[in-house]
Image (cartoon, rainbow, N blue to C red; front, side, top):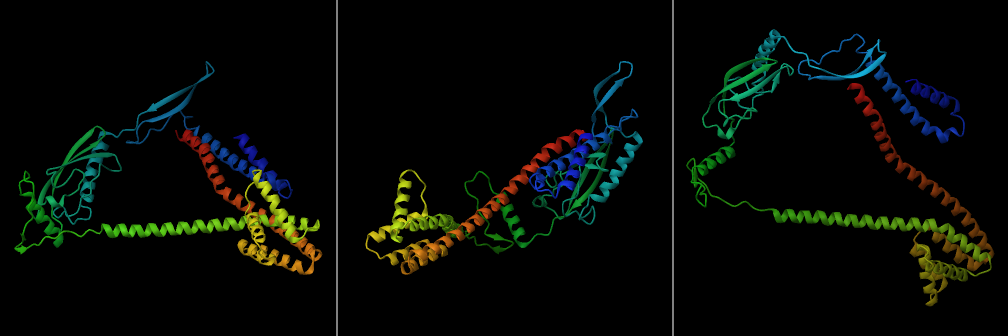
Length: 426
């Protein structure tokens, strides 16, 4: 207790004094976690200390009747030997006196009279299932039920409506009530009245009775032609299995189409993200080659050659350079430069690449010097954007990791707290 309490005081003091320090931001979260567990440990030790004093008077309270045996651990200290021995004590539950047992059994009879009917009006008009329990008087008195006709009502109090033949059925109920060492039987009667049936239920019951009268050894069952003097025409039920299968097929097709659309959309977003991440390096490399005196087409071809060599050496495939390779092939096949640049921007289909192509087209008119200045400005701008993008992606990754970390924290807290509380209440 002293250790946990001291840790709580130290951490609270540090939080108050060092919260304005810059390094505190780096250790704030670990300190809060340690503070939380220190508080939990302090509370656990306090509860344990409060529970340790129950046997100071040499008396231990029994469990109430029905609560079962009490098993606890105590320490027996022998002053003469100056030794302390742990002892496991098994204490039987408290028992009622004979008079109290009989009072509880009498009260149980009254409770049965009050609760048995449930939603029914009286013992003479039982329509719905009666209410019976295995115990009464808050569990002090156990009850065993037996009914005179188990084909009409089960031992759990469930009425079999299809078994009712007459307008009323008289049933005898026998209840054996037990409390401690005392037992007494309780007997009473009630009448079950059949529930009002709909026309469909009456018809089904009469048809079932007709079927029950036929010989069970025959291969076929003959359905009745008349019920209550009315002629019956039998028809097969229509099967809607084909329609259900068609509906399931349509749902599956819609789900597959939606999944395919999501897959394409995800693939397109992934492609755009890779193009945006490659754009700063692409512009920087192009600006460097143009600054070395190369023409625009020469710089493009040089970048393509460098990419192909890197790819042959086992380098990863990059989308922007694949589009550049396609553009070089079109130039070699006789396509004009302006048209090839426009095709390159259309295939990339992103605003930064369209802007780059417009700068390259303008550079052919105003010369490489002005183009170099604009490309350098563009390179500086996109590098700043890339840093911001990387920072945003890092924040998103940290947010995604927050949920697993919270789950792990809950699991660790459960591992620490549950055994402590179990040991206290044991």
